[in-house]
Image (cartoon, rainbow, N blue to C red; front, side):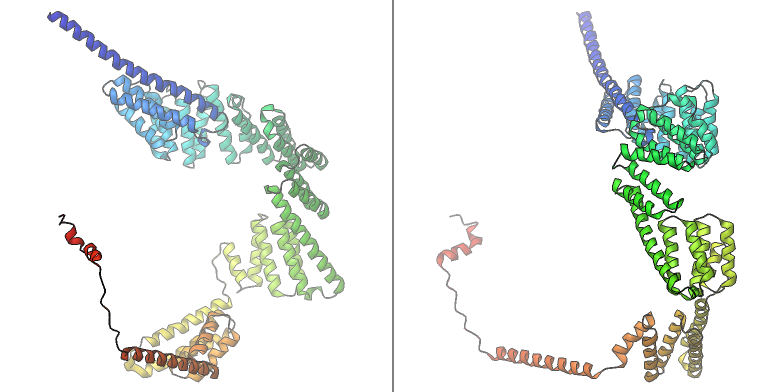
Length: 638
């Protein structure tokens, strides 16, 4: 009897164990199935982008990761003491968070895995993936620390990925040499896979490209292992390789590499762009006729497109810059705008076309002036003003810095107007400095301005641009210093005690004399005008209102647009003078107010003396009375 009960209990326990095992298998089977499906979606997504950091999961993929996290969480709730089952669940949850780009939660789960399951087989993957998530979460120093066990062991399954990540961390820390060393280590190891070597070549090429080491970048972009990368990465490598040759000014070889890209069927969507680049590099190589044939091919095969707009723009730019055929250039610019008006090239073409049209008008105007005044060119202010405007057009709208310099030099050599010459001299030096990148010539021209035109704003700015200590003082600077000295005397006078009245009067008189000298010596400066205003304040304090009014009127007449001139106008209109018209309006307004007050007063007394009306008693019906007695009706139900 007892033995029979024992057997029954044993089979019952086995049945329960079987049920829990089935539940675990069901959750994990579904989680792993969903993970495989999400991985397929992820791989398909990454095939279309060169870098995983530039792509994020779509809705369907994200939903699958959410279900994986849900299934794994159920396993952790139901089997917390089963180490093997919980380890698999935590790892899948962490991987799902990582693929969802939820870096903080992924890091937390990876930390949890290392804390409780460090002896598990997946720990090697966890070491690298946690470091990667820390990198993506902008925690670079901690990521480097977490990466140490990965790169310290060449037998680590993620050793090469670790070196690649280490190069990224070095790049973030602005240490490209260390990043290059880490990637070179990947290439030097013979056990690296062709794919990892291809990724290393691709990253190295990018680093060398940023460093403008075109030879090294071109070498790595053309490495054999690049063939193991996906289509997008191979396409990028081909494009950057050709651009390296362009930067080396090896234009014909660059055109050949773009031709190879043009022939690849997988890059069909970019063929029009490659065709334009072939034309541009051919044009840079000096073969304008061949380049025009290619550009016309683009315009014929891809009309009303951005590549067509770009082709027309290139032809217009060549006609403008090299052949100086402005009429034909304007025609090409018009075609560029018509081909694709909303594109960058279309907008630039319209700007240049308008600038060339304006340039032609200005040149015709100056030609007429020259024909009419052949013997008095240096005295014609309007002529040189137009010349300056032409120089601005060349520089800012037509990108012809050399032509702008030529126009400015013409102003400097032929104009007798010192202000125009000074302005043109500084503009010419600035163009050499900022646009032509010729610091030696710019320095020479800046020093010439300092020597010929000292104590001017342009000389001060020239010293600043040269990195020199500013020693030049303009008249405005000198007037300001004198004004500050006078203001100090005024402050001293205002702080004297009233008991020393004789000294106070003398101190204010000294301050007044100082302000008066500032205005006499620098009447056209801001500080000079401000000093004149302080003289008026002094006369008001005496009080000597007649003298104050004279100075206020002087401020208003000569310096009315300045803040002190405007203040003088306010003072004159509100405090010092009242015209007959002002008095008439004031009397009229006062009479109206008195009349209004009398009417209101009479109405008030009439109402006060009137007999009050007798109020009639209100008749309330019986029904109304009962309704009003609401208090009793609530309790007296009878």
